[in-house]
Length: 253
Image (cartoon, rainbow, N blue to C red):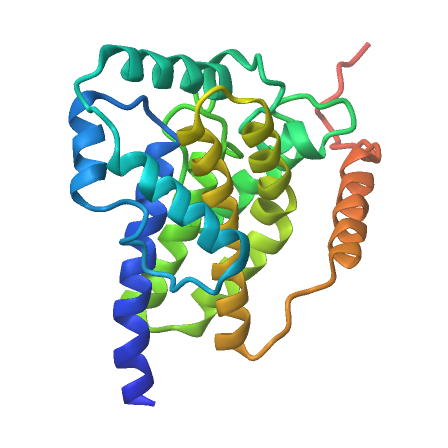
């Protein structure tokens, strides 16, 4: 058991670093300096999860080749990346919003029930987003950072409960919409980098969830069951709550 813990801790530490890097790349525009950093670290080949073939491997190889050939001082490259970042994360012109509510709400609105469910997860861990009006609780970046937080706790405190919570959060929230988001961004964005990053982020989280299932010895839940549970939560939240009467609080006549 001690040997297992000795292996699991550095693995989770590496995964946490990956998740924080992916969050950062989805949070802020790239500068010439950051382009150089990505080249120097050989992104995304340095990521912790071993390739298992298929789409994940192909995406990593294509993105690595693209970044290797960058001229990091090319103003046109930097402008193209900045414009694409704005289309995806700021203006919404791709109709591929980076927030869970947009993908799960019937009317595709922001700040709906999924956001408040995610906020409850954060509150249970004494966490809160800096400014939900700028970056909502259910924004991709915040959800990635929350998974990183849970796995960091799993690494430092060596408690299985944090692995279980990370798996549940991914099932109930992040993985319900991440792959559709990544696919639409890849289809509609203008740069190969953001197309690759969107799909890489989705594939990475899917592969991570598979590994958590192996660690826990519990199969991933069926998607239909997850959708049914989500719809049940939405119906419960939409039901009108009975008014409570408190003596002495009503106006007297």
